[in-house]
Amino acid sequence: MAVISVIIPLFNKEQFIKKTLLSVLNQTFSDFEILLINDGSSDGSIDIVTSFDDERITLYTTKNKGVSHARNYGISKSNSDLIAFLDADDLWESNHLENLHRLYTSFPNCGLYATAYSKQFFNGKKMKAHFNGVSSDHFGVIEDYFLASIIDSIAWTSAVLIPKKTILEIGGFDEEMRSGQDTDLWVRIALKKLVAFSAIATSNKIILEPKHHLSYSSSRIDRMKLFENFKDLDTSNISFKKYMDLNRFSVAIERKIAGDSSSYRQLKKEIDPLNLNYKQRVLLNTPPIIIGFLKQFQNVLLRCNIYLSPYKKH
Image: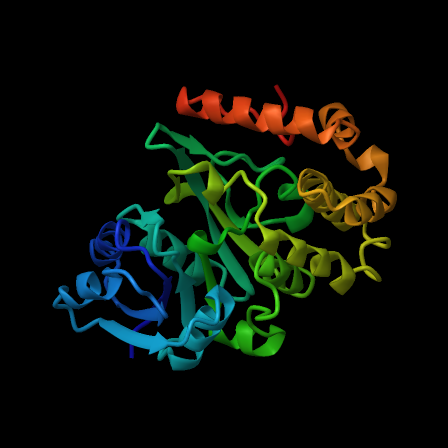
């Protein structure tokens, strides 16, 4: 039995899946299995996968039911006690699984293990994610997951390792959510379990088009369920309330641009303004047309390897 099961949901990623698979097969830690869940791909992705001759790769095909179902299906088919996730267009550094496994063996009683990660926009330079109050050499348990995640999230799907027993206890990805299902799972785990983190960035979030990261698809409305799920909890924990309010801010901006004024007003009403910085408070009250212009300007800056964000201090 492999030590780690690597689960990769696959839907029409023929331009990316070869590099993604190679980044797994080139790991310094080699005791793993790869479960590729073909979620109804209609392009050449499967031909690329089947061209690999490695007994650690197993391909499953399901009807198109979304990424949450694909991940949950992969978990059900896994033969390992530890589960790592990787999206089919992201990349790992060669020491990623070694980094995660060392974190697990050093702190075996945690419910979630995460590494730092980099973001790469438009084939530009890698930009390391920023974590609130976490030292650049941190390797161990995070004292306050929610406070540490108010800039970039400590947990990101392609950079986590979760004991299978934790998933069985807490539950897997919510298949009714098409957006925000990963955040929902991290919250459910972090509310009940310790989280360990390595500040060594060994995973890379690849963003080649604005639509992959910066736009507001119809699925984003599903994020409203995130706040409904935890509405009775985020008033008693100060850092959790701040974390949730920053998520509310993000979704409120999305809803405003999408023309969903009802959801925008609801979210704005639930936000404590003291949990937002000055830039965020201004943006929350900025007309949609100006926000749209600012997003376009952000894309221009990203192509110049300049990342401005309302979550970061400048």
